[in-house]
Image (cartoon, rainbow, N blue to C red; front, side, top):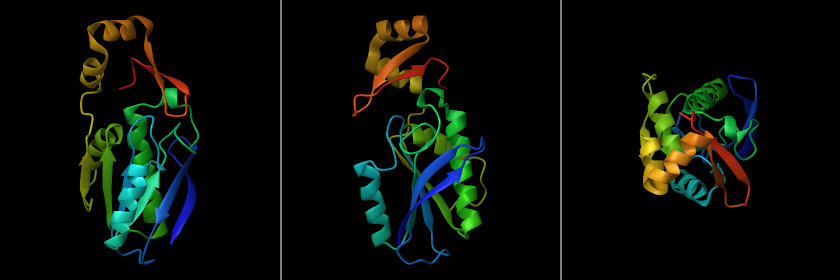
Length: 175
């Protein structure tokens, strides 16, 4: 069974997720899939991960972070702290639905947010990381170089163009 669900984050904004439970048994594991920045729950990668886990009788909960995909919020206002709160809201939502064996899979930006949330949990089933960005500034430095980083600091933001051509600002205070 796959179902699109809307739920609220800590700030009361609507987040969108897709729960996929191949057995309808809420006692089996469910993995919260946390995407990278400027990505989303419907990325081919996350849909493929969902299919692979579902074949092993593991449920998934793919959701869009604040400001991404079908979730409310301005992507330019997203911080790592906000992402951690969104993961926490996802876990609380799943627990309210009756799930108890919960894991996290985080990629890139979602990876570092997953690490931070996992550090607060005592009963996490599993933590899986896919290319987590631990030092966002170092990552950007490799991509933009010294001049690009100086421009980011002067302007206070850099612009990012997503696959759909939408331009968003990533502020220097992103972390």
